[in-house]
Image 1 (cartoon, one colour):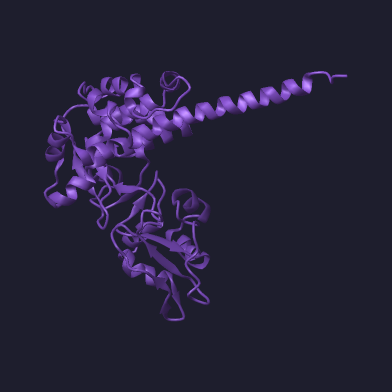
Image 2 (cartoon, one colour; image 1 turned 180 degrees about the vertical axis):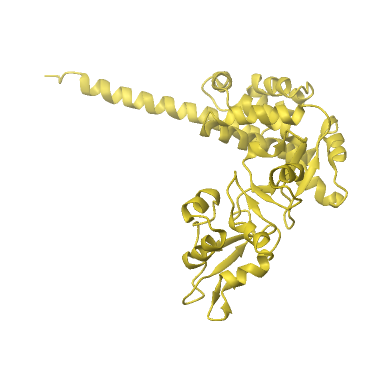
Length: 327
Protein backbone atom coordinates (compact mmCIF):
# COMPACT_ATOMS: atom_id res chain seq x y z
CA UNK A 1 0.00 0.00 0.00
CA UNK A 2 1.61 3.23 -1.06
CA UNK A 3 2.09 6.02 1.41
CA UNK A 4 1.98 9.74 0.68
CA UNK A 5 -0.92 11.79 -0.62
CA UNK A 6 -2.90 8.91 -2.04
CA UNK A 7 -2.86 5.98 -4.42
CA UNK A 8 -5.28 5.01 -7.14
CA UNK A 9 -5.45 2.06 -9.45
CA UNK A 10 -8.32 1.93 -11.89
CA UNK A 11 -11.47 3.18 -10.10
CA UNK A 12 -10.90 1.57 -6.70
CA UNK A 13 -10.88 3.62 -3.52
CA UNK A 14 -7.74 2.50 -1.75
CA UNK A 15 -6.21 2.95 1.70
CA UNK A 16 -3.95 5.83 0.77
CA UNK A 17 -7.07 7.93 0.21
CA UNK A 18 -8.60 7.23 3.60
CA UNK A 19 -6.74 10.18 5.14
CA UNK A 20 -8.44 12.70 2.88
CA UNK A 21 -11.83 11.11 3.55
CA UNK A 22 -11.51 11.50 7.33
CA UNK A 23 -9.61 14.82 7.19
CA UNK A 24 -6.32 13.25 8.28
CA UNK A 25 -2.94 12.84 6.66
CA UNK A 26 -1.81 9.25 6.17
CA UNK A 27 1.09 9.85 8.58
CA UNK A 28 -1.45 10.78 11.24
CA UNK A 29 -3.88 8.00 10.40
CA UNK A 30 -1.41 5.12 10.21
CA UNK A 31 -0.43 5.14 13.91
CA UNK A 32 -4.14 4.75 14.72
CA UNK A 33 -4.44 1.86 12.27
CA UNK A 34 -1.44 0.15 13.89
CA UNK A 35 -2.33 1.05 17.49
CA UNK A 36 -1.92 -1.77 19.99
CA UNK A 37 -2.80 -0.92 23.57
CA UNK A 38 -1.82 2.72 23.22
CA UNK A 39 1.41 1.93 21.37
CA UNK A 40 1.93 2.50 17.65
CA UNK A 41 3.34 -0.57 15.94
CA UNK A 42 4.82 1.33 12.98
CA UNK A 43 8.34 0.62 11.71
CA UNK A 44 10.40 2.71 9.33
CA UNK A 45 10.23 6.33 8.21
CA UNK A 46 7.50 7.70 5.98
CA UNK A 47 8.66 9.35 2.74
CA UNK A 48 6.64 10.64 -0.19
CA UNK A 49 7.65 7.56 -2.18
CA UNK A 50 7.17 4.99 0.59
CA UNK A 51 5.17 1.80 0.38
CA UNK A 52 3.35 0.62 3.49
CA UNK A 53 3.16 -3.08 4.33
CA UNK A 54 0.51 -4.16 6.83
CA UNK A 55 -0.12 -7.32 8.79
CA UNK A 56 -3.54 -8.95 8.73
CA UNK A 57 -4.94 -7.09 11.73
CA UNK A 58 -3.95 -3.71 10.30
CA UNK A 59 -5.40 -4.65 6.91
CA UNK A 60 -8.71 -5.50 8.58
CA UNK A 61 -8.82 -2.07 10.22
CA UNK A 62 -8.05 -0.28 6.95
CA UNK A 63 -10.80 -2.21 5.14
CA UNK A 64 -13.31 -1.08 7.77
CA UNK A 65 -12.17 2.56 7.54
CA UNK A 66 -12.31 2.49 3.73
CA UNK A 67 -15.63 0.67 3.66
CA UNK A 68 -14.12 -1.45 0.88
CA UNK A 69 -14.11 -5.25 0.88
CA UNK A 70 -10.63 -6.74 1.45
CA UNK A 71 -10.73 -8.71 -1.82
CA UNK A 72 -11.18 -5.44 -3.75
CA UNK A 73 -8.19 -3.94 -1.94
CA UNK A 74 -6.17 -7.05 -2.73
CA UNK A 75 -6.86 -6.54 -6.45
CA UNK A 76 -6.14 -2.80 -6.35
CA UNK A 77 -2.97 -2.86 -4.25
CA UNK A 78 -0.06 -5.10 -5.23
CA UNK A 79 1.47 -4.75 -1.76
CA UNK A 80 -1.77 -5.46 0.13
CA UNK A 81 -0.78 -8.99 1.11
CA UNK A 82 2.77 -9.14 -0.20
CA UNK A 83 4.66 -9.19 3.08
CA UNK A 84 3.98 -9.23 6.79
CA UNK A 85 5.97 -6.68 8.82
CA UNK A 86 8.88 -8.21 10.69
CA UNK A 87 7.83 -9.85 13.94
CA UNK A 88 9.16 -7.09 16.14
CA UNK A 89 5.78 -6.76 17.82
CA UNK A 90 4.32 -9.71 19.67
CA UNK A 91 0.66 -8.92 19.08
CA UNK A 92 -1.66 -6.45 17.45
CA UNK A 93 -1.75 -4.63 14.13
CA UNK A 94 1.57 -3.56 12.62
CA UNK A 95 2.84 -1.51 9.67
CA UNK A 96 6.22 -1.05 8.05
CA UNK A 97 7.44 1.54 5.53
CA UNK A 98 9.62 0.56 2.58
CA UNK A 99 11.03 2.75 -0.19
CA UNK A 100 13.64 0.68 -2.01
CA UNK A 101 13.05 -0.33 -5.66
CA UNK A 102 13.12 -3.98 -4.63
CA UNK A 103 10.10 -3.47 -2.38
CA UNK A 104 8.11 -0.73 -4.14
CA UNK A 105 6.51 -1.35 -7.51
CA UNK A 106 6.89 1.31 -10.24
CA UNK A 107 4.61 4.26 -9.65
CA UNK A 108 4.11 7.84 -10.74
CA UNK A 109 1.95 10.88 -10.02
CA UNK A 110 -1.49 11.02 -11.58
CA UNK A 111 -2.07 13.70 -14.19
CA UNK A 112 -3.47 16.67 -12.15
CA UNK A 113 -5.93 17.63 -14.87
CA UNK A 114 -7.28 14.10 -15.10
CA UNK A 115 -7.55 13.96 -11.30
CA UNK A 116 -9.61 17.16 -11.18
CA UNK A 117 -11.85 15.86 -13.95
CA UNK A 118 -12.48 12.58 -12.14
CA UNK A 119 -12.68 13.78 -8.51
CA UNK A 120 -13.76 17.39 -8.84
CA UNK A 121 -10.91 18.67 -6.70
CA UNK A 122 -7.18 19.32 -6.79
CA UNK A 123 -5.51 16.42 -5.05
CA UNK A 124 -2.10 14.74 -5.06
CA UNK A 125 -2.58 11.15 -6.23
CA UNK A 126 -0.11 8.38 -6.97
CA UNK A 127 -0.61 5.54 -9.43
CA UNK A 128 0.94 2.15 -9.85
CA UNK A 129 2.13 2.33 -13.45
CA UNK A 130 3.09 -0.24 -16.03
CA UNK A 131 5.90 0.81 -18.42
CA UNK A 132 3.26 1.56 -21.09
CA UNK A 133 1.28 3.88 -18.79
CA UNK A 134 3.74 6.76 -18.31
CA UNK A 135 2.17 9.15 -20.82
CA UNK A 136 -1.11 11.00 -20.29
CA UNK A 137 -2.20 11.24 -23.91
CA UNK A 138 -5.02 13.67 -23.15
CA UNK A 139 -2.76 16.32 -21.62
CA UNK A 140 0.65 15.50 -23.15
CA UNK A 141 2.33 14.75 -19.82
CA UNK A 142 4.94 12.26 -18.64
CA UNK A 143 4.18 10.80 -15.19
CA UNK A 144 7.67 10.61 -13.72
CA UNK A 145 8.79 8.67 -10.67
CA UNK A 146 11.44 10.63 -8.78
CA UNK A 147 12.98 8.89 -5.73
CA UNK A 148 12.35 10.62 -2.42
CA UNK A 149 9.51 12.76 -3.81
CA UNK A 150 5.85 12.46 -4.74
CA UNK A 151 6.86 12.36 -8.40
CA UNK A 152 6.86 14.92 -11.17
CA UNK A 153 4.39 15.60 -13.98
CA UNK A 154 6.44 16.69 -16.99
CA UNK A 155 4.90 18.58 -19.90
CA UNK A 156 5.83 16.92 -23.19
CA UNK A 157 6.63 18.83 -26.39
CA UNK A 158 3.90 19.38 -28.94
CA UNK A 159 3.33 16.52 -31.34
CA UNK A 160 2.44 12.86 -31.12
CA UNK A 161 5.90 11.29 -30.62
CA UNK A 162 5.44 10.06 -27.04
CA UNK A 163 1.72 9.37 -27.40
CA UNK A 164 2.26 7.21 -30.49
CA UNK A 165 5.20 5.45 -28.84
CA UNK A 166 3.01 4.53 -25.87
CA UNK A 167 0.22 3.26 -28.14
CA UNK A 168 2.77 1.07 -29.91
CA UNK A 169 4.20 -0.07 -26.57
CA UNK A 170 0.75 -1.01 -25.25
CA UNK A 171 0.04 -2.99 -28.41
CA UNK A 172 3.38 -4.78 -28.13
CA UNK A 173 2.76 -5.63 -24.47
CA UNK A 174 -0.24 -7.75 -25.46
CA UNK A 175 2.07 -10.15 -27.26
CA UNK A 176 3.34 -11.62 -24.00
CA UNK A 177 6.45 -12.07 -21.91
CA UNK A 178 8.89 -12.12 -24.82
CA UNK A 179 8.03 -8.53 -25.67
CA UNK A 180 8.30 -7.49 -22.03
CA UNK A 181 11.80 -8.95 -22.00
CA UNK A 182 12.64 -7.18 -25.26
CA UNK A 183 11.57 -3.85 -23.75
CA UNK A 184 13.77 -4.45 -20.71
CA UNK A 185 16.72 -5.13 -23.00
CA UNK A 186 15.92 -2.02 -25.05
CA UNK A 187 15.77 0.03 -21.85
CA UNK A 188 19.20 -1.24 -20.83
CA UNK A 189 20.57 -0.43 -24.29
CA UNK A 190 19.23 3.14 -24.42
CA UNK A 191 20.28 3.70 -20.79
CA UNK A 192 23.86 2.78 -21.68
CA UNK A 193 23.73 5.12 -24.68
CA UNK A 194 22.23 7.92 -22.56
CA UNK A 195 25.09 7.61 -20.10
CA UNK A 196 27.64 7.65 -22.90
CA UNK A 197 25.88 10.33 -24.99
CA UNK A 198 27.80 10.12 -28.27
CA UNK A 199 28.96 13.48 -29.72
CA UNK A 200 26.84 12.86 -32.82
CA UNK A 201 23.68 12.40 -30.75
CA UNK A 202 21.67 15.61 -31.15
CA UNK A 203 18.10 14.75 -30.19
CA UNK A 204 18.56 13.53 -26.64
CA UNK A 205 20.52 16.50 -25.26
CA UNK A 206 17.91 18.81 -26.78
CA UNK A 207 15.10 16.79 -25.23
CA UNK A 208 16.83 16.78 -21.86
CA UNK A 209 16.76 20.57 -21.73
CA UNK A 210 13.31 20.93 -23.30
CA UNK A 211 11.76 18.63 -20.68
CA UNK A 212 13.66 20.03 -17.70
CA UNK A 213 11.59 20.81 -14.63
CA UNK A 214 13.39 23.64 -12.84
CA UNK A 215 12.31 22.37 -9.41
CA UNK A 216 14.56 19.34 -9.96
CA UNK A 217 18.30 20.00 -9.76
CA UNK A 218 20.05 19.69 -13.11
CA UNK A 219 22.42 16.94 -11.96
CA UNK A 220 19.48 14.89 -10.69
CA UNK A 221 17.45 15.67 -13.79
CA UNK A 222 20.07 14.19 -16.09
CA UNK A 223 19.50 10.86 -14.31
CA UNK A 224 15.75 10.78 -13.69
CA UNK A 225 14.81 12.16 -17.13
CA UNK A 226 16.51 9.35 -19.02
CA UNK A 227 13.43 7.14 -19.28
CA UNK A 228 11.28 9.97 -20.64
CA UNK A 229 13.98 11.31 -22.95
CA UNK A 230 14.68 7.94 -24.58
CA UNK A 231 11.17 6.47 -24.52
CA UNK A 232 10.32 6.78 -28.25
CA UNK A 233 13.60 5.13 -29.25
CA UNK A 234 13.30 2.48 -26.53
CA UNK A 235 9.89 1.37 -27.81
CA UNK A 236 11.10 1.32 -31.42
CA UNK A 237 14.13 -0.77 -30.43
CA UNK A 238 11.99 -3.14 -28.34
CA UNK A 239 9.74 -3.78 -31.35
CA UNK A 240 12.79 -4.64 -33.44
CA UNK A 241 14.31 -6.98 -30.83
CA UNK A 242 10.97 -8.73 -30.32
CA UNK A 243 10.62 -9.51 -34.02
CA UNK A 244 11.19 -13.22 -34.55
CA UNK A 245 12.27 -12.88 -38.18
CA UNK A 246 14.88 -10.31 -37.20
CA UNK A 247 16.30 -12.55 -34.46
CA UNK A 248 16.54 -15.46 -36.89
CA UNK A 249 18.40 -13.25 -39.37
CA UNK A 250 20.88 -12.23 -36.67
CA UNK A 251 21.44 -15.87 -35.69
CA UNK A 252 21.89 -16.92 -39.34
CA UNK A 253 24.64 -14.34 -39.80
CA UNK A 254 26.64 -15.99 -37.03
CA UNK A 255 26.99 -19.06 -39.28
CA UNK A 256 27.27 -21.43 -36.38
CA UNK A 257 29.87 -19.41 -34.52
CA UNK A 258 29.59 -16.77 -31.82
CA UNK A 259 30.18 -13.04 -32.44
CA UNK A 260 33.22 -11.27 -31.04
CA UNK A 261 31.87 -7.85 -31.97
CA UNK A 262 28.65 -6.56 -33.48
CA UNK A 263 30.37 -6.12 -36.84
CA UNK A 264 30.25 -9.93 -37.07
CA UNK A 265 26.47 -9.55 -37.33
CA UNK A 266 26.23 -6.70 -39.86
CA UNK A 267 22.45 -6.72 -40.15
CA UNK A 268 22.12 -5.86 -36.44
CA UNK A 269 23.87 -2.45 -36.41
CA UNK A 270 22.29 -1.59 -39.75
CA UNK A 271 18.78 -2.49 -38.60
CA UNK A 272 19.13 -0.64 -35.29
CA UNK A 273 20.46 2.48 -37.02
CA UNK A 274 17.64 2.37 -39.55
CA UNK A 275 15.02 1.74 -36.88
CA UNK A 276 16.19 4.73 -34.81
CA UNK A 277 16.89 6.96 -37.83
CA UNK A 278 20.51 7.46 -36.86
CA UNK A 279 22.74 6.34 -39.76
CA UNK A 280 25.88 7.13 -37.77
CA UNK A 281 25.00 4.38 -35.27
CA UNK A 282 26.22 1.70 -37.70
CA UNK A 283 29.83 2.72 -37.18
CA UNK A 284 29.44 3.18 -33.42
CA UNK A 285 27.74 -0.17 -32.86
CA UNK A 286 29.88 -2.27 -35.19
CA UNK A 287 32.91 -1.86 -32.94
CA UNK A 288 31.12 -2.91 -29.75
CA UNK A 289 32.38 -6.05 -28.02
CA UNK A 290 30.28 -5.68 -24.86
CA UNK A 291 27.21 -3.91 -23.55
CA UNK A 292 23.50 -4.80 -23.43
CA UNK A 293 22.99 -5.00 -27.19
CA UNK A 294 26.03 -7.20 -27.71
CA UNK A 295 24.92 -9.42 -24.81
CA UNK A 296 21.45 -9.76 -26.32
CA UNK A 297 22.89 -10.80 -29.71
CA UNK A 298 25.40 -13.17 -28.13
CA UNK A 299 22.68 -14.87 -26.09
CA UNK A 300 20.43 -15.20 -29.13
CA UNK A 301 23.20 -17.00 -30.99
CA UNK A 302 24.17 -19.19 -28.03
CA UNK A 303 20.54 -20.12 -27.35
CA UNK A 304 20.10 -21.15 -30.96
CA UNK A 305 23.31 -23.19 -30.95
CA UNK A 306 22.27 -24.86 -27.69
CA UNK A 307 18.87 -25.68 -29.14
CA UNK A 308 20.42 -27.23 -32.23
CA UNK A 309 22.81 -29.28 -30.09
CA UNK A 310 19.97 -30.59 -27.93
CA UNK A 311 17.91 -31.39 -31.02
CA UNK A 312 20.85 -33.25 -32.62
CA UNK A 313 21.46 -35.17 -29.39
CA UNK A 314 17.82 -36.22 -29.10
CA UNK A 315 17.77 -37.17 -32.78
CA UNK A 316 20.85 -39.32 -32.40
CA UNK A 317 19.42 -41.10 -29.39
CA UNK A 318 16.17 -41.79 -31.19
CA UNK A 319 18.04 -43.13 -34.25
CA UNK A 320 20.11 -45.45 -32.08
CA UNK A 321 16.97 -46.81 -30.41
CA UNK A 322 15.30 -47.36 -33.80
CA UNK A 323 18.18 -49.36 -35.29
CA UNK A 324 17.88 -53.19 -34.98
CA UNK A 325 20.42 -55.01 -32.83
CA UNK A 326 23.31 -56.58 -34.78
CA UNK A 327 24.13 -60.28 -34.65
